[in-house]
Amino acid sequence: MGSFKLGGMTLGSLFKKPETLLYPFETKPAPAGLKGHIVIDAADCILCGICAKTCPADAIVVEKKDRTWSIDPFRCVQCSSCVRACPKACLSMDPAYTPVATAQSCRVVEVPDPKAAAMTPVSAAETETLTES
Image 1 (cartoon, rainbow, N blue to C red):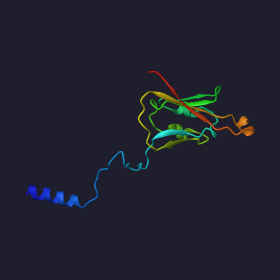
Image 2 (cartoon, rainbow, N blue to C red; image 1 turned 180 degrees about the vertical axis):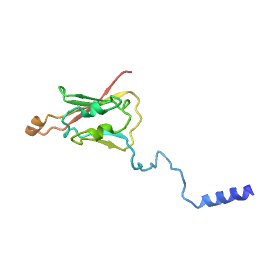
Image 3 (spheres, one colour; image 1 turned 180 degrees about the horizontal axis):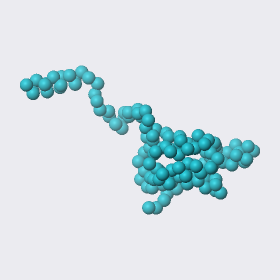
């Protein structure tokens, strides 16, 4: 009886769409609710520091004096509490795939001064700094 059941499953799967993907060539779409990684719109950021205060893992550092906002992706637990706490809604969660890191780094974003930006349009600069663990 078991061989008839196995044969039926085998013949049935010949005419169905395959369940697996050829991963490097085909990728699955991101499921709804996937958190991904933090993205900042530096032009809207006012460097209030509320995101750094609400981060449970202390992954975000806001330097008002240097006008920089930085995040350590290795410490971030992707809880999106910083996104919910941001008063200007300049933080968001991007569900895009992030390649695997080969070294621990911290993403630093320079936030433009709104007074200087009114005189000259300057885009926010983003740099990656390596940190030793």
